[in-house]
Length: 361
Image (cartoon, rainbow, N blue to C red; front, side):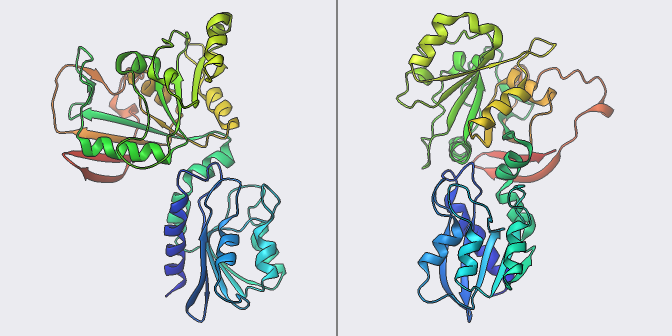
């Protein structure tokens, strides 16, 4: 196998940590000697051994003189665990092949430098595009100090997310909804607006597939949500309310929400009277939320787009035409096609009876 092939294998192994390691990165590691894999491992859970250590500990024989393959630069600093480069040096690995450098300022280039100073041959830049994509959540979180934001919508061919009476609960197929549940398991949190809670009373859990439930975030600027909704009555205490600083005067309700196990973040308002989503994202990052799946509705979508606070857009398009109904995005203040927002189509896929379009800025 080639270096590229082993890095690809490390990437596939790293994916086993999806939903378990955030806000740490996804990392897989392979140890090879004389074309024989001696050990393999991945970062399994936040706060526990990194991939390199798990691979070393799984080795079937002495790894001195081996080549270690890893999709992300080994760490060189003390965090919740000791530096991985120290163990690699200690075990007298001969060669280290790295998919991509770590964008974390505490690591970037330092791990590679330390390995080279120890006389280890280091090669960097294999399957780099895929390695970066694998850890897009982590890289955004660690460099910008805000979560990676994906907007997800289910719409008709003519761009409607609900009929005019707001009674159309399901637009897309079961297969598309199953995919959404799988997406939820990959993100740290799912975000919706108070209007969606009032209309649909959702659970925002992972039910149609396996995976851990994400944290639930609701934008409720006036703190008017009913405490009888499923989000409050759920046994899981993972609800975060984003509300205006003005809501602090509702002390009785604030105390009740806290007593029910939910958190509240009081956010300042913009000049337009909307919550400052940039501040909200900064506060959420402080809670170690590195990725957010925004599931709507119309007002929430419009706010994230107007404030330019999204990284990608996932559109599940059902082959239906409504004509009249609630559009996926409201008024953005754009009056000319020349000034329209332009996105790039990253992928198009058929999911059941529907089409999934992945778009990036």
